[in-house]
Image (cartoon, rainbow, N blue to C red):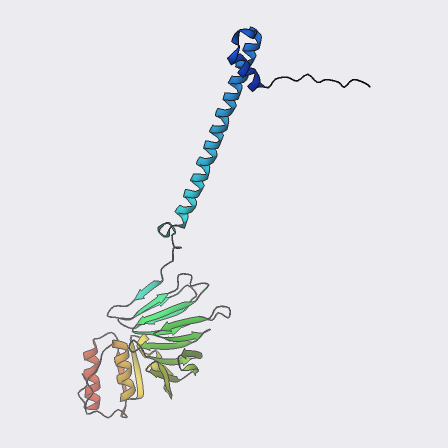
Length: 280
């Protein structure tokens, strides 16, 4: 039978180190130097592996800390919200032209807020007083006014909104069509119509002279055959006052010139001279 070939088995490094430990004199110097070199290489590899594991562990810990930091409530910043622009009037009326060409006349002591991106969202809010709106036409962007819980929407028209209190408003349309929406539904108000809400709900619609909508936007105006009731309501709305009107005839009609450049009391003297009443 053919002989089986024998492989030369080389002792492992561990076996050679054990032999060197037990019989140091049996190894020649070259063999000892080779063992010493192998020992240094193994130690170097071990240190390198430990260093790599350390850096891997450090990186993982840093990643966890960053993730935890960004998940903390105090580290999550809310997106910055641009503030609405507020337009105010003091003791006299103020005219303002908006970016889209719409013109607003603010009666004394009135406030309107304008959406920060008004060109794309023509949204406003009447927070106080009375404002006459002359809205520029824009078929792509409707114009809306929020007041209390009411919403008025238009594309291009002229009308006045008076915020009566925290619930109710009075809407008077001089020209065009206006949509009034609230808890009681939606109502289309057109030229020469006036509607007042009560308890947050839309009331009856009245037909009025369209001039009533913006009579106070001029320095003076001549009023013909206007009822005393309508005139007093216009005065109270514009000046933001409550007049004493005891013992008057609200249906009485008069014609007079109202001068917006003089104090209210001066105009009331003319009104009382014409009617014989004591309105103050």
